[in-house]
Image (cartoon, rainbow, N blue to C red; front, top):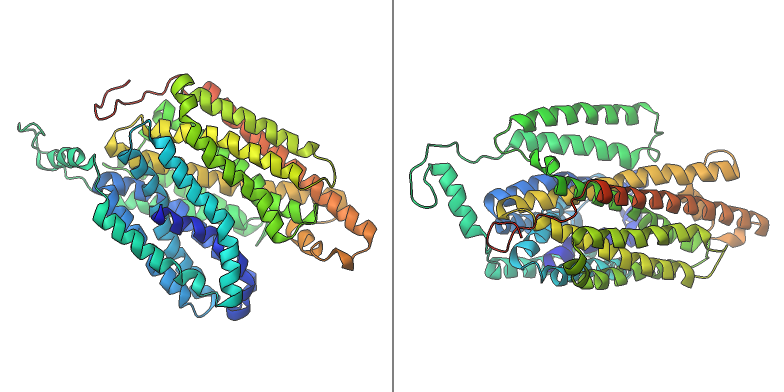
Length: 502
């Protein structure tokens, strides 16, 4: 939980300190890369760390991730300009990728199926606490100390996490996996008999580089398209074209590799492919509440930043509670039906959002977010626990990383698509080009605008966010379609410690 906390709070604590960072280092035109660079590094390294944890074990990968994250944090605190800070944030992200994927895998390794919802809910509570405490902590440190403490505060937490991991983490499935790996390397059976000599297990570094490069180009195009340059401009088209070419090269490299970073069975197995696509749709729909709801709360409802954050944070309170109780549902009706039930509830909530009155009361969207968190807790956790339970130890890291990777990519795609939708609605309502961020900034001081203009702008923002939520409802419907058509009725769960299906 401490290791996960490093990655969880890092995404929220930096956001409130951006004015102080820019005021000290400059670089206003590129400050968004403080977040984009970190996101890129986390996302594209997830498959690599998943394969490494399956090959060498979870503990060395997690230890390396914590160390790399702390080194990145120390470097960020020592940054001398915006370019160096962005580069060091990428180093942080390289460690963050190991933290996110490996911790989730360890939770499945350490605890039997019946206990995993409770443990996963505790991990989810780390994200919930970070969503609430991160912005406040960042604002306090930047306002009353120095923004560099935002990164230095990671050091004591990380060192304690590192000590606990090194001292107490014992991988229960590693001994058997080590014997099997040793048998593959030396040509000796686990039972003692001789076998034909086989090639040593090796890391597919060429595949890792291809995955990294492909993901970097694709995510850069999605994150910066429509922001730093137009979608149909040469940079966007060049990045997307380059990602497509590198994607084809990656497929060729991975098909020829002895131990591919992204093995073909990740997509050939029906259960894993269905969960990957369903959680990719979850990442897509999550953009609506996490990115656009705070803007709606401030620009339409007229709330301050703290109150707007509370409207969103109630979702992070109901999500872990629902996830912790989900085992009482899926043990009776199965993983698939539980996830369908959760996403059906989420679909109804997302469709209800555009029906809210204008301007409405803050409790109305807060109630919807409370219900949305409860619904998504029933959706995500059963799928994660279920898919981890269908694979043995030596495939669990790769499987978990593929699921998290798809969700991260879905979130990046959603930010790009829904940003274009929102700006398109604003352009249609107001005429000319639409820019939701610029419009939200102008509504921060409504007293400077005529009342009629303020009302028009608020209604335009309200309409833009309504369409985003309708798009999120479409993503929820896509997730339901995947579960209904691709996911098996019963997940082929392996018996605890037996290697057989139950």
